[in-house]
Structures are given as structure tokens and as C-alpha cells.
Length: 345
Ligand code: FES
Ligand SMILES: [Fe+2]
View 1 (cartoon, rainbow, N blue to C red):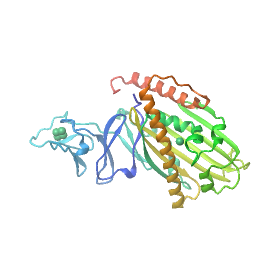
View 2: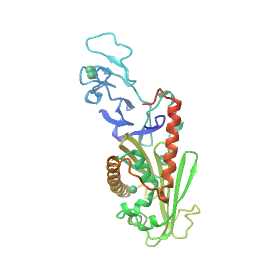
View 3: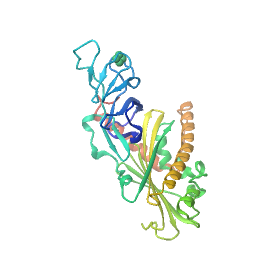
């Protein structure tokens, strides 16, 4: 079961064009495309005649023609043409989903369209902020989205999963503080006077120890902000002066695809070498490699969960953030179901 009345990322902007993109989101088949004027559209990927996916049909101007018997649907999901008959029954329609295109991503509202509210987008505005540069991509995760959120909230795994890129043993050696504010969970780790990991050396040119920070914030349903960086030892980074180092924000949306798979949309924002395409490429390659390492672990985890769904697991100190987050999600699911029993799927 998923929270429905929230914005999820359906695609990165560059994924949408004048062709049909089929994507499953929250277990539902969704069809995405752009109109001739460039506007993003999301309708159900299902013809209401015989349930054939519309994605095997074709775009006809701004509408979609089913590839089986030729019914045509407009961007609002209304059937506007039926071969061989003039009168189109009012019931001949499919869902269309509210969309907002922002921050290089296409956000979709999977719940009650009447409740879709732009004000409920998470604050990813740093992506557009002057003086910062952004790069992002999508990664397929073969695991439940909450395992993806766990992974981002508990960065102690860097020491074991990402030794080649961003991990050093120092990460898991440093305790975290976990705080909650409303439905948001924040996990903070400061590492003083530690060696910089390989990518920090490459990106920040550090030749001695650094003060390093990792601040992970998660908000329902599946948004995770990672604020990470490092600065020369003792230059006041912890007190807020980060001018002697590098700052990175890694913004994530782990959109559930099915119960056991997810689309991870990440955007990396930085305030150094912002006009340097080599740095952008280096970062993208590093994050792709890092997330591949994560995806491998998460897929293996899901597989074991499938084999042994009732096997007991033990929480450790680093899990405080994920445990709190899951509790919040469970409560919100109960609330959403109670508020709209007829709309839950
Ligand atoms: S299934 Fe789409 S037109 Fe028949
Ligand atoms: Fe990771």
C-alpha cells in the first residue's frame, strides 16, 4: 500500500518527448508524453475498451490512438473517437493525472486529483539556485522504495558498500544524531579531522584532513535530501562557514514502481566548479557507480525478504532514522485510508 495524495516524480524532464513512455508508478500503468507545444501529459496506460496498454498505440497530434481497435483518447483521458460509431459513451474514459514540471523533473499526483496542490511539492529549489549547478538521472531499484529510503538515511553503509568512491571507514565509526520535526526525520553526522575520501580529493583538491558532514533529511512519502561536504579542518564548517570546502546536496525521490521495485530519481547540486563540464561528468559517473553498488545490495536484500518474509531482523543504533520514518509512513497510511476509504486501491 502506498500514500497516494502526494507528489511523486514520474520522469526526468529529458525523458519525455513526442513518443509514448510507459511507466509503472505505485503499481499503476501510466503513459507519459509531450504535446506538440511541449506540455507534459500523463494518462492511464490502458484502453478502456479491452484493457490493452495504450503505449503500444501511437500519438496522433496531442492524442493517443489505441493500437488494437483504434479508439482515440485526449490528454484529459476522454475517448474522442471510436471507429465505426458516432456516439461516444460518457463512460469511455481513462484516468489522467495532474502533473507539474519543475526542477528538471515531472511530478505526478497519484491520488485524488481534487487534492493536488502545488504547495505540497517538496522544496528542491536549490536545484535552480544561482551559484549552484545540477546534474541528475534515474536509477532502477529492484527493491521496495522504503529500502531505498533506508539506504539514503543511514550512510554508515558508505564504509562497506562504497569504499572505492565516497566511503571511508570513518563514516561508520562516527555516531549520528537523529531528530524529528513533524513528519520529517533528520540524521546528522559530523566527522572532525578525518582523511578525505577519494572523490573529495578529486573534487575539492584536499591534501590534508577535513571536517566532514553528512546530513540526511527524509520526508514522506519518499523524499530524501542529503547535504554532504568537507572543509579544511577547523575552518568553522560546523558553525556554518563552509567557504573553505565543498558543499554538495543530493536530492532524491524514491518513487515506488511496484511493491518490490522503485525508480530512484537523484539530482546532485554543487557550489564549486559550477561551469566545469568535466566536474559535472565526474560527479555523474561517480554517483552512477555509487548507486549501482547500492542497487546491487538492495536487490539482494529484497530477494532475501521474498524468500524469508517473516525472518526476524534486529535494529542497530544507526537505524533510529529509518525506524522513525517508517512509523510516520505507517501512521500516514492509516490516516489516508481512514479519510478516503473509497479511493484507496
Ligand atoms: S482495446 Fe483499445 S480499441 Fe480495443
Ligand atoms: Fe549508498
